[in-house]
Image 1 (cartoon, helix red, strand yellow):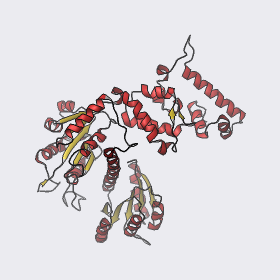
Image 2: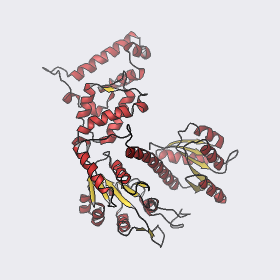
Image 3: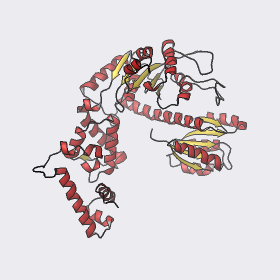
Image 4: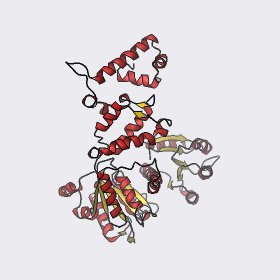
Length: 456
């Protein structure tokens, strides 16, 4: 999911401000309110992802707020905060559907950990929605690539999916390793069980063991209750270990034991628990090189690399680029262009096809979505593309350079600037009037002025 929007609801100003400040520092969009009725009104907009809410408040309790939000059909995940004396109330809130509860005084690390879990699980729900669409082969949700390398990957997926083999997926960032893992799960006999993605590089090292294997009550400071790990959550399903190369060495040993024995032991626990979990791992790093340098265990590498799928970057399957671009223009038009079906000018399309796309599919999505927002007159032109791509213009567009003359691109920019400057002069500096006379939007005029260094 995109960056989460969080609402902190607490009638104690100091607690509310400290919590909101720490969440903002962690990169979240945060709002804060001191009363539950005001929070309910705010959440009616439907854009609050997470509510961190005190239970005991005047006028309306946190539980009453949770109940009202659920009855209103608002999709907000609740994290409750309670004093020790109201644990029974917190348990009642859990029965009503709260994600979890924290006891005061709350620790910043614990709050951030819980929020990350919620973000991951909300994202998982959205991903599974897309997965169902992929399985049902509904249109407009996924680009069906047809290049020879992708067709070969499809064959490999079809071979390995029905088995319980461990799979290692490699490839650069943005190539679709996660999508490939979900397809393997969806085509397996485990499709009806959970698919749990874990980014091994995003979980703090001191929390990842508890996250994977769980912990017993009292296992460490702050472990005031037992916690199921993700291996237990994924029982009978698939655990997708993304960025496996980031896993610390001491946890590589424990992961190897789990793969071999299909048993886990929670942190602080004495008893092993049997689990039935398929492991799919992914990385953009060269694990064989890491084995040579001693930063990745050789025995774990062999266990993970039973069946290897490598996804080549877009620059090595350029026939997929044109199809992806046109697919995104149609799919994202509603979200970013008010439903207008935009076309690329030949020059813009030429540059997009010539670019190497180091960020792969994810970068194509970002560039196309940005262009859909900027474009006017139902055409995406060179000016709607980022500088990293337009820098290719001199090499890939028709050139009028003869005897030291300017290129076509340079001449067009100079002519465009002269038209804009003349329109501003005739409008006596009124940019709104100048934009109307030029037949362009005011935002486009401001952007052009910034490009030419005349945006002051």
